[in-house]
Image 1 (cartoon, rainbow, N blue to C red):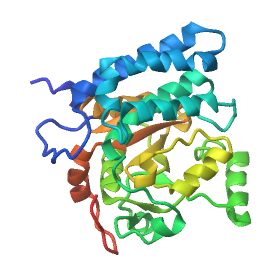
Image 2 (image 1 turned 180 degrees about the vertical axis):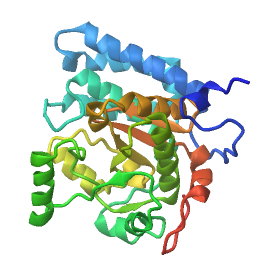
Image 3 (image 1 turned 135 degrees about the vertical axis):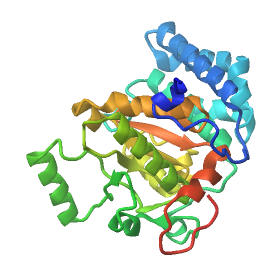
Image 4 (image 1 turned 90 degrees about the horizontal axis):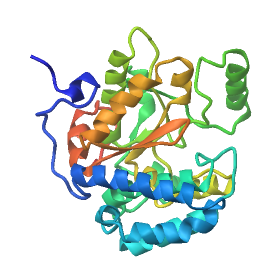
Length: 314
């Protein structure tokens, strides 16, 4: 008997316990939303030689598109607030090699797709700063899990210290394909639900990428609002509000996998999760951004490996 397509592509098995949705539109609305986003972005690209000036009319068109309103009306403050924020983000766009967005149209696509994250998690208070992250009982430490070989994915912790930077430079200089060219996690912490999710995704990717024997690499999980603002000042397209700042998103390395020829396997796995309503997925170039749906957070928190310390809600 032929297996469902989701299983062939590495997606979650149908019939699993799904948990209870707490927010966000159902998957059919999200499929329509993504199609409408593509159409709006196409109009921005085709409308003028100066896409920045065309943003106003294009976003006015977006405000009148039912498929977009179906999601944007669920964002805290509603569609008008969301579109006004995106307008400001577009007006402030400046090309920067650090940014995931190479032009206003790319930024518009990322910003509109990110509104799914905001509709899901925008009512959750974000982590304001380092202290809020480190004191949160809702996060668990990744280092003990890594030492116990209970993480199916790899990560590097961001560092500004000279020894760490020297080590990273040496790897990039002498063994450039050994690791991704990423600054690393802001904090070695994650919500249990994200650990459970990333472990499952990494396992499905490993099976899909055989005979390659590498491991999925995660560039970012939790950020504070202060970190996100600092990245904005450095030229990164670190938009706010962000599900990274509530701990419900991750950025998964893709450019490194492309160099190894196995990126399509992970793309298929993540696309299947997206189509099944488990994740919001955004192609941001070097990495793919993923955000966990509230409808599935409880299930993945329950599946997460136990670690020392106290865990709060997913």
